[in-house]
Length: 426
Ligand SMILES: Cc1cc2nc3c(=O)[nH]c(=O)nc-3n(C[C@H](O)[C@H](O)[C@H](O)COP(=O)(O)OP(=O)(O)OC[C@H]3O[C@@H](n4cnc5c(N)ncnc54)[C@H](O)[C@@H]3O)c2cc1C
Image (cartoon, rainbow, N blue to C red):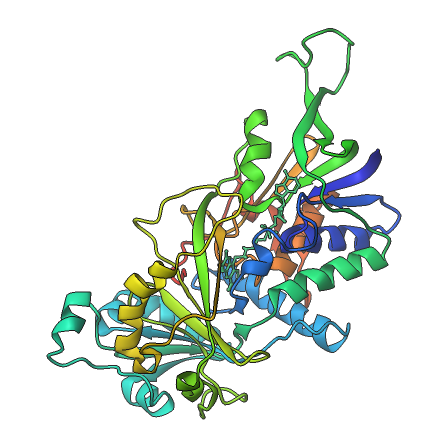
């Protein structure tokens, strides 16, 4: 089989890229393949679905801010119900933590994009079910749980249905004539000499080489350009070529709760129009949770870092004792309403972590483009990354993001990479 562009990976990045490329030139034959039986079944649909424009790095800010506008457009103008809920993000900090990042927070606030700092009194008033201070509590001391001193609240933030988002891109891609092959695994990228001589052992080191497609479980697919958007599995395809995905897989889990005790989170005035708890990040252990409004549940995750090994798994499983023995004790200190509440559902996936600068990577080599290393924010940056990938494939130095802001494609590349350190990582 032959096509113009082969996209490996039907996750949010594969489909956003495929859609933007097809939109640029509907006459191009673009084929998306995925080893799974449907869209987003890798990590996209396992996501918490959080989105935010609170980033210290202006690159991350731009990628997310324009994508959020694009998602709003998809919902309001294109008729896709991606369940965009602007419930806000609330980052809770101890005084010690806040002092360390105060200049970065001030820079974010000065951008003037609906980010504000809440004093302890304001936090207490808006979130009455939070215990912000622990006095002489010995258990709190043992856990190293610090008093809350400050909240950083962002209003252009919230939650969406990641599965619906992937399906929305899939639908738009198909509408334009895009082709999809599920249950199709790319087993090897095919490298050929640019000038084939027909000699055994080609390509030789002295020959210029190019990727000409992939061998798959359904046969060879030849392509002018192959886009690797295979998420945490990308390195398996890139290794034989000596190319780097600049990301390592790390397990992340979501625990879902539905319990009367958690009702206070759905009745909270003062921060957002929905009158609910924002997506909230605790000052300890990178624990975060948000109300999921369509099913009236709470989705909770933890971005544990040192001690959680890098490991590529085909189908990672959640660990209930990770919640009961680890997260629970910290969580009930700050929010006693979680006491004795057990998860009704749980699942696990993997972040594709770029631990150098926590920013996505996009580059090309002959015949091939790679997009990935989106760490824990690939959903919220998906529209911008798809547009930048499209510009890369089209050979354009700049991509126009949704709303007209321009982005230098090489900034996310390797050779001329230009990104800033990110303070707000979760
Ligand atoms: C628990 C969890 C919570 C998260 N929370 C958030 C969040 O709140 N906000 C946010 O923005 N991001 C979040 N993320 C991160 C986000 O999910 C990812 O950044 C995003 O899904 C990456 O998209 P992708 O298309 O690169 O990867 P994927 O969705 O994993 O897609 C890659 C696809 O490639 C396919 N594939 C791989 N190898 C092959 C092959 N050889 N042949 C064929 N197909 C192949 C896979 O089957 C998969 O479908 C979270 C992730 C996890 C795990």
